[in-house]
Length: 305
Image 1 (cartoon, one colour):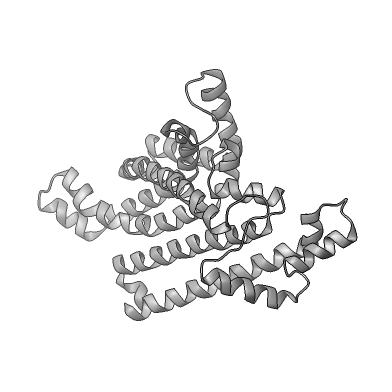
Image 2 (tube, helix red, strand yellow):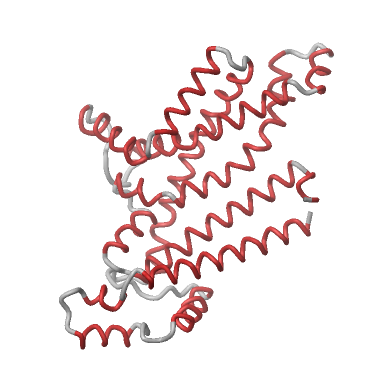
């Protein structure tokens, strides 16, 4: 197990380094950063002054190594627009994004597990077909479009929920619903397929032959094994929700890390954009690592692969 954990940890670190390099290079390949900071109408002297001030005249490799060394020590530099350090901005916005992602994933698990179990009890039955059709419909709807529909109906038409901001718990209801609908199909399908396999297994037939009640067979025996892939994928799903927070936080005006990224891209605040890419990538790699370790703990066969 220790060897497996070390291998997955080294893989996560390698992916993180690759993400930081690609993000750093792509940001500079998008145009002249000094010109974007100074503005299109600026004088050449002003652009050159900014280029020297921010070290943009140095080779890209030197710029990356300098930035990476400081980032390792928690120094992401100063924002070009906000009065705070980038590290302070990240620390202020990150909890909102983590909280929103956790709410969305939690809601999808609470709804998806029982519905997936019910669908598996009678595969291809009416309830199974209705649930599978529903999740396909939910998965087909883009999150930003669904978010706008909910804003129009619950916020503007009925006026019962706020449509923008993150000041109260009510502000999180609509974005949590959107995230839950986006994640629910994966949770429901994994639960359904896992339960179908488990209910056909020999140990379930043995449990039934011993006279155990149907509820005991389903909950204590079948569901326990069916949850293995769900537990493993839940961490990855949370990482995907957090990584995809830019669109949803922008639609609902939530002051999280995704909204900060959108603001920074529009204002050419490249130190904040770079830090955002690194932090979101690190969260995704960390949750993927946790998912792999959990999966190996639940299924020992993976440790030898």
